[in-house]
Image (tube, rainbow, N blue to C red):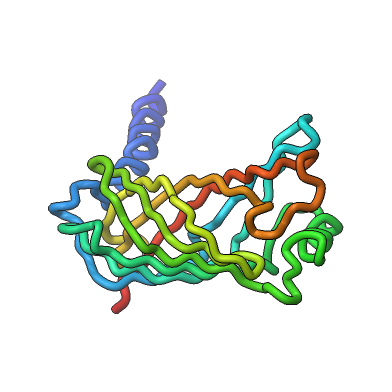
Length: 203
């Protein structure tokens, strides 16, 4: 019975730990610091989802990204964003499928190893939301794409002490518009993109 208070105390401390970590970040833009940021490659990913013959949703990812963000929390619409995606580094957990997706049937990464996104317009839609329109260059084709973005917050990383801002975003593109039309419509033309990234402020 004497162990119960100690166990309860340990449980309370464990329960409080995530809240303490989360307290490092704020979504209050009046308290967020701006500046020049670089994408933290270890905490960034683009996940893509397609419909496979109408039977299921199939997922893959582009885990190798680089990017820069000039963020102005007082005037977010004036911020600038540039991202480069290593398409050749795509991952589906199926090596044979990865090889096929890298082939001329799909991304043809021997010719087009990277994709880029450069923001051309940022529109604030809410306290923590916005629309980021930019030019996506993929498979040698450039088209405008709009990301529906959410701001997770800014603050000091409790482990690295770096000042960080984090975002999620969603978008949908038609792969045929970028010249990637193999197996359409059996493998869906519409591709959903789920994007997440942390940016560290440059020292």
